[in-house]
Length: 415
Image (cartoon, rainbow, N blue to C red):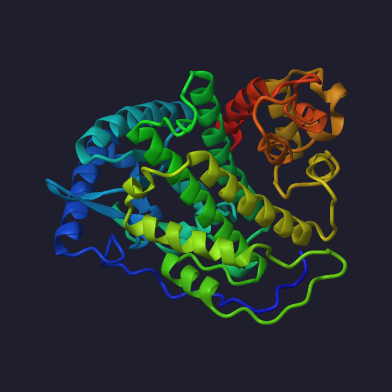
């Protein structure tokens, strides 16, 4: 990727250490704090004391930017509660058993607090060599240690945002684009189920909320990617909005690339303001009368344009069509150990895949997903591009529905 124009600050101002939400009042903060106390106590009761290092709240609530809603019973959290359970001195078998116990505990706690609870295990012994990833960098910048060693993450290497590996944003766009694929699949299922014309929007209230929540997540990822392309990435959503809304310097079309650095800026910014509001004050009932397919098409246009422009900059060369981007020799910026990559390929695609698609077999399979996704995000029901079929390990011709199901199965492993 070419050097960005502005230079982002190396060390953004630290996330607030005394809040869970951006603008919640005392009642909102007390509700979230009470949930954290319940969850911390439950985790402490499950993890053997000699192996417990810390319980770290990450994500929006960990950096003081969690969302909430006001209901009949008072304020309630809206976003998921995400945690790292940091352990030490545990063998592989003990960690596997603990992971199962935490998964069961998460389901129980979700029923109590009203939002999804997610636990991931983190070995204290590996913190000093933690991967430089977007997730780790954001956690390092903004988190809350609810129990255990307060400075447990100080062992991690420094991860400045301006030096983030560019493939991390490609990975983010993959994960949020996959949500758009899920939305596309849901609309197709509704049509196939005989929904009346105009009722391709025949989503029940829960489905509709999830559908538009996925759209907003994809728009926010486009904001992250556009900021990163300009060297302005920041982990705080309030700061992201301010940077995106700042007047853009006059820029000419890049003759080598043949496009504006980040297309459809006005439409994107309108969508981003909406997605930003829903991040903190979700009100998905306002979409009750909207056509889901039209909204999906609008967000897909922004997502594809953002990924296209960003990848041209990351790669340092252009491509005319997503088919060209899909090729195995166009790297997608996903790191991995060669031996591990080949082992995962043999495990999940079979040993013959090494002969059928030798180049793809050398890379971590997430590259296959990134290659295929833009080609899958087309009109459902049609045969997919042969390159996408090849990336997914499918014969050609293959049709959209089985290909999308294959994609989602692989994404669950490699996201």
